[in-house]
Image (cartoon, rainbow, N blue to C red):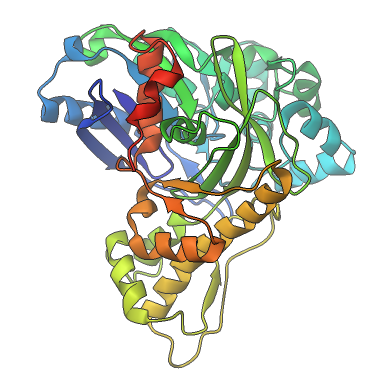
Length: 459
């Protein structure tokens, strides 16, 4: 069973041992925007929608807890929750990875000359994207919280940690190396929480979860919740899980996930490669005491712009309409869209950028705007591919694509035309969930090595 807790929905997919989907269910939840550039989720709603998707899938497949070998978890990364160690009650909403409220904390760190220190230790460019400044904001701004944290009453977790805590009935407080590496608090050379960075952001160390390898026993989902004590044996942040599910096991393999945002990762093998061009260095996974690293180019807003067309300006009813509308437009009519709703991430790193649409005339139609929105995804992806080519020791010859928008034929063809290399789309586009399931299968002893899984990827 793969739990795929994303930015806009909680999903559960049940796979058989050949990696085929048996049943799946998806549950959207509320996006909270308290101020411009601020994004929050309700942690309890995340848990309830995840639980609902689990129950739906078990009913659809006609299975009980006894039939489920293991659980894998993959999650929106960097999103930050602080909760009470005893009651399990969050002290504030989850602050989402897209949220820009801590940009001023980052500005202060840069003024103090701490950018190189942070990059050297964590592989990350200092940005409001990551969890560290979000924890600091909660401690500094929610009344009474810092005192409780210093007294050891509060814990922090990314979404994987929160779900494991809830599934285990509050008995397990853990994360994995991939999620830890996205906090801006984890030293990727020494593979441990970094005391100097914790001190810099004034975060008590006792709040942090234990860090484990991406495949192995994390804990057990409680019998009270799923009808059996099911082992949780695989955990990875969503983009690392997608890299794994795409079979990108070799150095130089590249995938791009087309989701709420877009995330391009290149496997760089057992060496952490530091980018000169605005990409991040991150942990790909840790298996059998062996590290794999990746270069990471994240884009904040791609699929979320299509969601905005639907929910914000209401010019479409569903994302599935956009493919035909883009074809019907015939061209973008001179309209270009930069959907920087939450600033720009790689390779620009501009927290203060905001969305812009140009080239609108009296002849601009809904179809032109829809096409420009899809094209904006492809242009942003090209930016990252260009700089990844500069940082890589070998030219990128193929891009593996996954995520919801990989089903959009217009977008995939426009992307391939723009970057001039093949875009390979797999049969199973939910490679994030597949990667989590594979890590869980590996952790449960279903496979002896990742090489045994290479045959499960199908074009």
